[in-house]
Length: 468
Figure 1 (tube, rainbow, N blue to C red):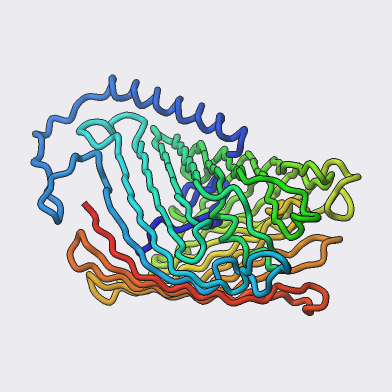
Figure 2 (figure 1 turned 30 degrees about the horizontal axis):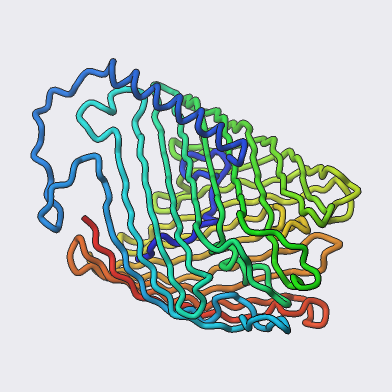
């Protein structure tokens, strides 16, 4: 029962049709061109498609006795009330500034969700376009102890997919705008992953896009894929010296790549693939610093996707990233050429009709959100879900996040979280939920070398969701 949860790092796979990743600033217009082409194709196919001869069906009535139009696939309102024991994710304060260490606060979230299916009418899926959906969600969160942390998250997601004969395609684009504070807090020592939620409440735009075009033969397939992510932090920048010592600046970052996958079918629903990506990462530069970590890369991939067993689905890509960093004189690391590991995988097990187990992992290199270093980012999760009845479900898991900074920066930040969720539907249109998450931050380095990385954060909440 989550109301518009943050989703900066939902694991995704480059060009994979089952899980799609995020195109950046230049990806924005590229995604727009792709969507325009899809819309034109939809118009052409709608004009040429023959209408289905079936008589019109009576509109279905929802749990509230209302007959919504067929193109409105979701309309819901969510209210959440909770408490966060450490809203800034830090354990010590900076002298001369307001105390933020272990600052707890009650919070209230009000959210709405809408989803539209533009191919809901009879005969609209007879052409090449099979899916054309738009979803919008908004969530306003108020923090009782720190009004400056109030924010509104607006998410717009557009998906188009289809195919004809052996050809298939997909365009999946999401745009997030957070209306939040443009001023940051003043930190002393901190864990980079601890202040992540603080960054996610600031004024910003994020965009992600995944696209692919696939040709599917009897024993093999070929897939052209493009993926990108774009982060535009719209906060005020200050040189962190003097009166602004401790102020955290965050930079704009993006990652875009494109390439080709070739797959050999080991079974009708299992394939071994080899792929190659050409990409680049860029970051904004501070007015007071010349440090930069822009890079171009070639990524070689080997992967496996499909069903290993009837109840076990796998999708994994792994291989080396061959990086070349530009502007070697101002790098935030030693040397301009590096080879890094790239790994992204997911295992989904349907143990019983009531029990599912999902394991995910991603290891890759990106620019740190502070823009001062190149980092290896690691994300791991294990989630178990159980349906106690048709109305009652529960889940529990373990999540591990890590940011290992490349030399010469000396820090290695990690967090471990244990999330627990309960959901119970009083009626098909009215559900209540409860969530708890315990997070601890730590570092393998001693405090004398890397102080402030240890912190604790506990978040508990209850929610009510009405669907129409």
